Image 1 (cartoon, rainbow, N blue to C red):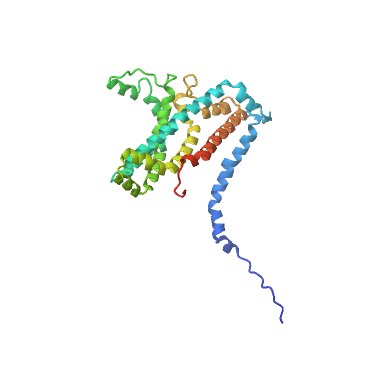
Image 2: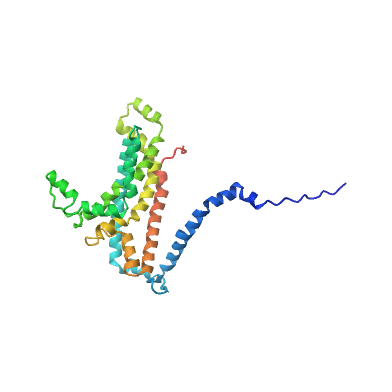
Length: 309
């Protein structure tokens, strides 16, 4: 008998290796991976290191341990006020924006000849809403001699209100601006509404359910995954709000509109305390992460997925 001889495997050429689906996938995601590592992962790691230092950009960082965090929690009275202002803004702006987005989505769910136009018009504020130009326009609208007071004067209401100068109204001008930027959430709600089977509404109508009952018994339960997705996104966006406070009010009056991100920016680049600013950034990462974790942990109690029994 002849001994079986091992047949050597032919080595694949470089072109054959590059033409495999696996390699092609890596090639396509490579730009994202490079961008993520260079512009997100690396800066985050550096900022975490700087949060334990005294660093003013002009001089080399000096390691001081947890001193920045200790100062932030115990020796900076402005910190907790700014944090409270931001929480107040998120607490009201996020739910109001989602309610507005859902209401408009329900109006646009029926397809008409002008549906595309209306969707584009309602989505436009989400694109330009965070721009400096819109912030300046909003500031002029709510000025003492602005459009808002002029409209109030026409209908016979008090028209001498200093919207941006009063501690009880200034923050609400920024909340209203946030609510106006409901376009992205509206499109997501619109997509979710179209996924709800029409047969459910038809069966409920046959059983005698009215519009309100259909909304709370069918629309809301079926839409909870979309609500959950929008809630997470808008919660994160709320804590990241910057332009509104920085351009429109500069934190005035009496720091009642000074957002966390603006105060963090001031510490980092105005007061030259970059190490302290990095510590503030990581505390916000912790807060947003904890709130997001709570939402994920509680979603089983109110979010209903179709795959569930």
